[in-house]
Length: 109
Length: 110
Image (tube, rainbow over all chains, first blue to last red; front, top):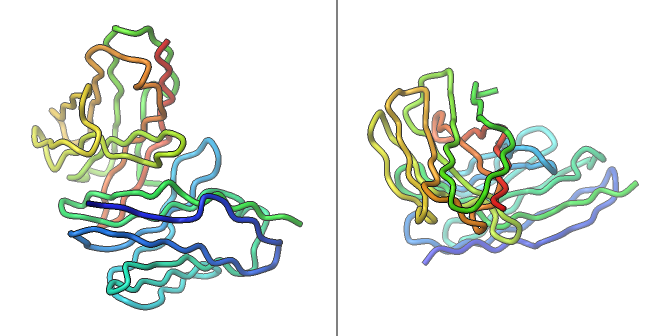
């Protein structure tokens, strides 16, 4: 079967670093995506990993280990506007995405 | 901005009535998707399309049908709406392996 696990909620302090973990199980895997979703809005694309390793994009980085079925999203220099839900998803055949339930991050002053 | 619009943005309807949601894109992308998002479930794929008149079922397709007669439009129809179909519906397109989402339609079935 297919499954994704990520923490339901996290809280971190403004200016700090936070790591959001995601573990997955699937028989077909073409890549791992992270999306950000503010309350009441559409998800927006953050990152895409297809090979093992770290992808860095500004304050956000994403890591993938295909052998371990594990990914994380690293957010540095947290800002209040980073308070949002972060969705982990893996890509199967036909470009389809299977999403986790998301991690709600609250950034506090 | 991937040029995706959805209509209507909000709709309240009664159980048993038919409902059609429209997704429109301006960039001529081949793949289009319909998802629903509910608390505790995340985004779940309803149907997707890989070209005009080419569609396939996703994870939660029961009670839904789709049509794509033009590249730019992907329609989602609830033939007879039920309260369990109260949800937020997102359309998405695929651009170079990345999916981009429309603004969403909040549907309430009373």
